[in-house]
Structures are given as structure tokens and as C-alpha cells.
Image 1 (cartoon, rainbow over the protein chains, first blue to last red):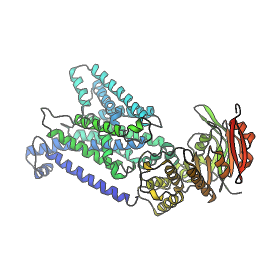
Image 2: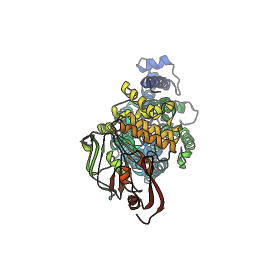
Image 3: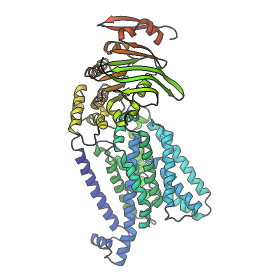
Image 4: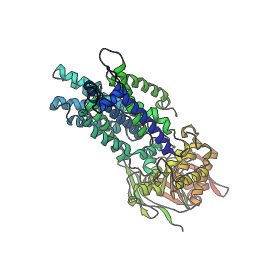
Length: 339
Length: 260
């Protein structure tokens, strides 16, 4: 029952934090060169060999931190969007938000010739994501039945896809086309602390917005009208969630390209541990997202292949079948039968 | 006369540029159970939504003597409980957690205060829902869900309850159970404004019946005065006999009577 929920949540969050910490450490040790834990620790503080210092401090640390931040904000964005739309199939990735963000970034690069390490990039990516998420909420309408939502998502994703195709079509040279392809296949390879610094402020701001409305998500269990009658101003809740999701997705895409399905899968994995309560879900979902992306990023380094598989490709390969299973489980709702 | 809990004066509502309610005036006092009846599309649901502050309206609405517009969303949520038709539960929370949502306007978070627990306990006892406190709400039957929804509203401890078709799709036993819960709430110095289609239930349990037709109040008074054969013919377009049963008028509609 309800007794000691805060205690249960603290235990869950603690356990997930330990897991994320262990994965973070593993991420620093694993790669083409395996480093032992003591080597990693001494390299972290700049006391290792020159090679170890570079591998840990400049190659693996930024990559691990980005996996943590991007996975965490995507998990949080998924939990918040699912809370707002009262629907476990809602996730920013399914609605073309990352493609729209990628489109924003690509447009800025090809039109304004900004450097790939400029702050203009996350701003453009966030603008792209904002348009797509706001469009989705508008098209789906206040009632947002499961079916309408998925169809609206499909439409928005198609629009973002068409925009990206247009950008590829109009690409002035093969190099620009490659650049666009890169944004579509998310990767954490060869990132520096500078990338972390570009994304971090937007991710922090987005996370604050996404954590704001946990009580409203709980009230939304009873539908929009009843939640409004319980004293929640849903127009503002919607604005905060849409902006937060756009900031989280846009900032991630700006530094790592499009990484799919974390926002869908992460909340799902921890939901049973919080009694399906959408108000208790966001923080555990963020940690679960961080853990998922860290695992995926470690996996791409270990899977033997000629060129490293992009982590965005791996998450989509695993996430899409997961999505299909979720749809199958909720087929009753989709066909209009009673749940 | 007891104090007015809900006062509505000259209320008009337009949705999509269509006028749904025009110049509606009515008062619900402490201890009163008032039922709104009327044909489909008369504006009954819109009246409840306007009274709950969920749709923009012109005119005056006051709760406990304070204009609705001057209450903060939290104050409004503490003074009225709104129970829409069809009891939706989007996530499989436990019944206890659903009832606890009624405490949100009182500031309840993930952990509950003693006052929260007490109010939830009383609401669940009142509605006979303690037995499935730990069950996911989505596993309950329609009648059980209706009682859980009612418990959620009672847990807020708001003086005014606004409820739309609380007996829809319930079997006979549960219809009476739910109406009796509303009656008890009114008797303990609360106030209830309910939309009902079942005129027999309304006549038997309501203190007053307000008839709405075409967005206007066409009658407002005790069941016996309002539910007459002439009124039913005019508003609902039916030929109906009004029979006396157990001290209340019993309506027996037997044919349609041309256009209302």
C-alpha cells in the first residue's frame, strides 16, 4: 500500500544509481584496449601512462558522460511524455522529434556554415524538436486516444523524414550528404568534453522542466478534465513538457545525432517498480535510460565488426521490436475494445 | 434556509461559437441534493463543467459565497469535487492510490499525512472499497470502479460534489448504492449537483429537480411539482403517466408525443 513510498523510491533510485555508476566505470575500462580498474583510476587523475591518460580522459570519459546524460534525459523525456499523454507508447523518438532536431542542426550547418562545436547547433536542434513535439500535441488534440496519437506521430515523423530527404536531395556535395547521414545514425564515438559542455546547459534546463509536473502526471491518471478539476493548469503542464522534451532531445541530437527508443524502453522497464505511478516514474526512468545507453555504447565497442556499429543503430535495432511487442500487448485498446 | 454552497446567476456558455447555455440561474444550498435533468444535448454536462470552472463562461458562479474566478486552482479544487461520466483510469494504480489522488488538492505527495490517511480511510469505508484497496483499479468491474471514483471525490472533503451521470451503466443495486452515497454526502452538510437520466431515481432521492431544455432552465423545484405529465410532454416529447409510489412520483413514459 502507500506506506513508505518515499523509502521504496529511494531504495530503487539508489540501486539504479549504483548500476549506472558501475556501467560508467565499465565504460571507461572497455574498448579496443582493455584497462584494469587501477589503471582507469590513476589515468582519471592524470597519474597514468600518457596513453592511458589520453584514452581515459579524452576518449572514453566524454563518451561515457554523454551516454549518461543523453540516456538519462531521453528516459526522463519518455516518462514525462507518457505521463502527459497517459500512454505507455508515447516517446519522443516515435514522433520524429530526433529527425526534426537533426534536420534543424543540418539546416544550420549547411545554410549558416557554423562550426560543429557551436552553441547554434543545439539551439537549432531544439527548435526542430520543439516544432515536431508541439505539432504532435496539436494534431493529437486534448483527448489523444492511443490510435490518434500514433497516427499523428506517424504524420509528424513522415514530415520530418521528408524534410531530411529534401536536405539530402539538395546537399551541395557528397560531404554535406554524409554529414546529414551522420545526424541520422547517432554515435558517441570521438566526442570531447566540449560536446558535453555544449549539451549540458540545455539538458539541465530541460530536466528541470520535465521533473516539474510529477504531481500533475499522477492526477492525469484520471483524465484531463478531472486533473484540471484537481487544481492543475494543464495548458502550462503541456508547455513545460513539450519544451523540456525538445530541450532534452535537441541537446542530445546536437552532439550525438539521433539515438532512438531509449525514451520508450527506459520508463517501461522501471514502471512496475513504482506501482505504475506516473508521478514516481521520472527519476527512475532517467536512471534506467542512462543505464541502457551506457550498456548499448559498451556493446558497440565489444561487438566484433569492421567498423564500429553506431549506437543509435543498435538502440533502434533492439527498440523497434520492443515497440512491436508493446503494440501487440495493447492491441485491445487500439481496436477500440475495452481494456 | 441553510447557506448557499453553489450560486449560479445568468450563466451563459458558448462552445465553438454555438450557445450551449443561456441565462442559467440556480442555487444549491448546504444539505441539498439537486438533480439536473433534460433531453440529450440540453446542456446538462456543460452546466456541470462550467460550475467546475472547466469551460469559459459569462455570468456569475460563486462557491461558498466566493466568486469562482477569485479562487486559485488549488482553492477551487478543495471546494468542489468533479466526477465526470465514465470513470477513466489510464494507469493500473491500486485502488488505494486512486482514492489518494483526491488528496492532491490538499497538498498530498508520494507520502501521505495522517489527515490524508484518515480522509482516505473514511472515503473507502463510506463506499465499501476497502476490500480491494490493494488491487489494480483496472481489474475492477464497472460497479466497483464507480464506487472507487466516488471514494476519490469524497477523499477531497470538498463541500460541493458535481457529478455527471454517476449511475450510467450500473446495475440496479449499484445505482441505488451510488445515489445513497450522494444523499449521505448532502445530509452531512455537503451539497450535490448531479446530472441524471433516470427520472425515477431523481424523483425518489433529490430535494429539487432542475429541468434544462435548449440551454435554459425551464423548471426548478421539488420533484412532485416539476415532474408532471405536461412538463414531460413539453421537454422530453413523451406521453408519460406520473404514478405515486413510496411517497415519490414514479414516471412511466409510454409513447412519444410528436416533436418536443
